[in-house]
Length: 276
Image 1 (cartoon, helix red, strand yellow):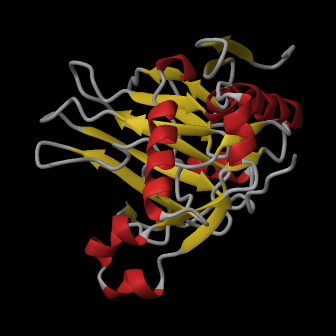
Image 2 (image 1 turned 180 degrees about the vertical axis):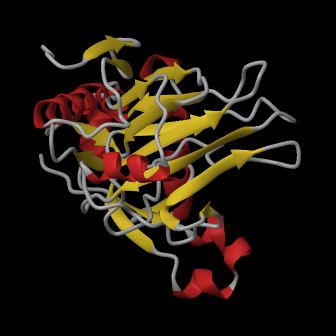
């Protein structure tokens, strides 16, 4: 794909690209916005270096792609900005969010389209990378017989086993659980990808629990195949923007006791569907 207002440097042929030639502290022109949109569709996750943006500029960039999402169980948001999740870890952290492969908030009826993470502080000696996996590649690598078996299957995506302990009764009343197709058709590209994740998918509908557990474990392990991945090494003032409809990510917590800090904006999406 040819680009005129941005530079696109692929991390590998499967997933991931760094974008240069754009200052996200300034409003995007229509052509530059469209080229960033196209680069995201082509590469599933895009990265921007050396960006200095305010919380309002962060939100403005997200809003170009759609309405901003507010997490139903967000424990920590930036004061005055409920759309901005604080993503932070320091010497007191025992674990961090996102240590399992997952697609953000897949338990909602309309899971988010994308997530935009801006880190302003990173560990001084390295660590804290984020891994991304292409669900197109994961689907396409399956055998034809497995693809045929998965067609038409649906799975439960639940939040309560993740957030219930922290939010008590609120989890039973507010936090959602929804049923989505195991194979999802991307609404923009029309490509098919896996749509189950270790973080939130709990069972496949219509299968006995042992069969469901075995099949899900196979798919989770399949997603971990290195050939489907790219790895982003963070520097301060970097941004990652990933498409939750076709990519999963995994945050590495290998930097304790150092500090890692930033904010995430999430863009609302639509109901997953499968089209043969």
